[in-house]
Image 1 (tube, rainbow, N blue to C red):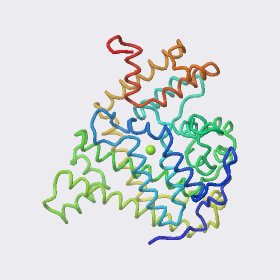
Image 2 (image 1 turned 30 degrees about the horizontal axis):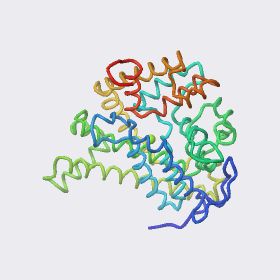
Image 3 (image 1 turned 180 degrees about the horizontal axis):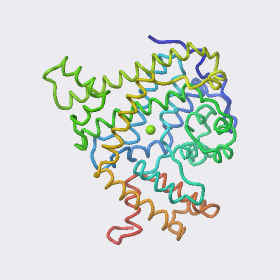
Image 4 (image 1 turned 180 degrees about the vertical axis):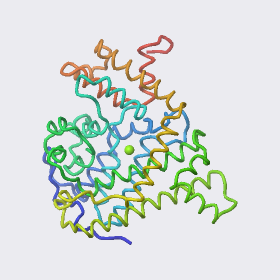
Length: 375
Ligand code: MG
């Protein structure tokens, strides 16, 4: 069932606007224009070669940041349509949410944060906003992509008080309280649905997880036993895919039911009422618990698996050594980054390192520390 734009949906015709005023897009809404700018950005193409859990060269079929972001957008859009939300805004936020991610996944982010400790730290979510606000260089009239306030607000999921003050309007809710629009709330939960499920798939594909282990997790066990009952002879990849698609469906259905109930109770009559309400997009309490159980399982058994940790410890060293080498001698930086480093060396280096793909970081590390390849 398709619902027309609901009263509680974001309205591109009533956006709080862009930082640099522009005339309205012709033939598409302002949120569509944002989505299109994101797809055409350099940072978006880099996602193809950035780690989700497995480093790109570990296998051709594992998720990368790019395919992860596309899966998030797919889940978010299909829910948005059923809730009458603005699909373009939800898609823009979903496609942009990881643009600021470092190479090598969370290990890269943690190490860069440690490197930047005395210069205000590094946070990939804040970096995503920095990419769309400042770092992309595509347009004649401004730095960044000059996105609408609502898209920028949705990209900024969390933020420290100190950073919120520096960010101005888009950081205000972290000081004064309040929720972002439903499209942003939804993109956030679609992210969780996507990674919990594709990490099961990638974990099994890599051999780091076993189906028997996953049977200890309620969400997986219940759907797996239904698949077995319906298709007793199904095995291998098809069994896994059939189980995962049912888990995604169960999560999405619960999220829709719960969110519809909350919207009915609070009856927000527009975006301002959404901002003043408690979080309206969410799982039911029992489903929240079951999703958390799956998350805990993946943390303990996949993200902390020794083979993943072995990769992440190597990745941390690459990030640390690149950062230290540039800081020690900014002449090692390519000209455009060296120019920026004259003002604020640490931040310019963090921007450069964060923008690297996995393989670029590995190659650059070799160029700086080894004589065995051409420079
Ligand atoms: Mg994500």
